[in-house]
Image 1 (spheres, rainbow, N blue to C red):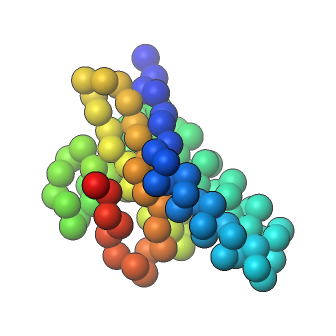
Image 2: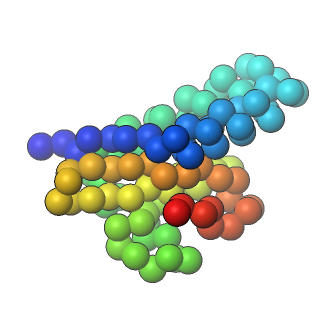
Length: 99
């Protein structure tokens, strides 16, 4: 049984913010960028532990997928059978705040 994939308000804001920045130079590139994180996380519903544990947190429930140039940080909850996309950040910025 697949996990439910949830996008947090913070992750949605992150995606919109990054796309807006990219769109200032290229609306086409921004549109292409927005598809990328969705493609990166679509399989997490079936394979929630495929991402690596975020080294800065050291918590096995907080994982990430890298889709250059971004880190997509998510929480996998086996008990609730959910995967929550917590944040999307530029990889050069380090670990995002996921509170």
